[in-house]
Amino acid sequence: MTGKISLDTNAVIGLFRNDPRITKIIASYSTICLPVPVVAELLYAARNSHRVTDNLKTHNEFIESCSILNITKETADRYSMLRLQLKQKGRPIPENDLWIASLCLEQSVPLCTEDAHFDSIDGLVIVR
Image (tube, rainbow, N blue to C red; front, side, top):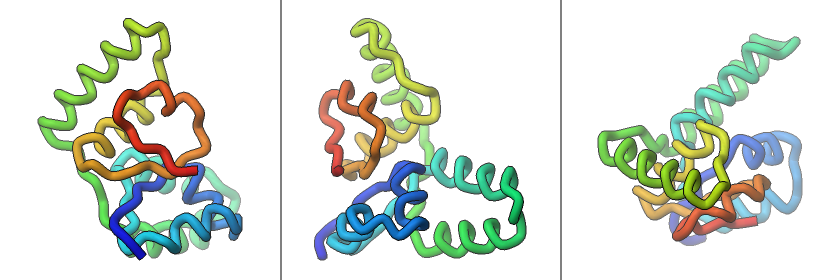
């Protein structure tokens, strides 16, 4: 196992569904990180489900086992630059994904995701 990897929400869902490809990727890293917007999306998904109690328990246990990437002033500065760059390229992405990318860039952590729009972000290391 080597280093850190950050997970996008779709990677966490893949892990919860025992996707062998996602499980193999994650198993090769010593530290699993979750950007705080991913934490929010996971908690929302649990609360918006038909099995709120069970899903909140599962999601919270997983969240507690990960290293959380929190938003700082530096993250906000990086976000503003990244959002402007993507606007100028004509390639905007969803707001939460801007925060996720900004945190991964700030922390120099690769991102495991299924979302192709992250490919437009210079310097972001994507793991698939």
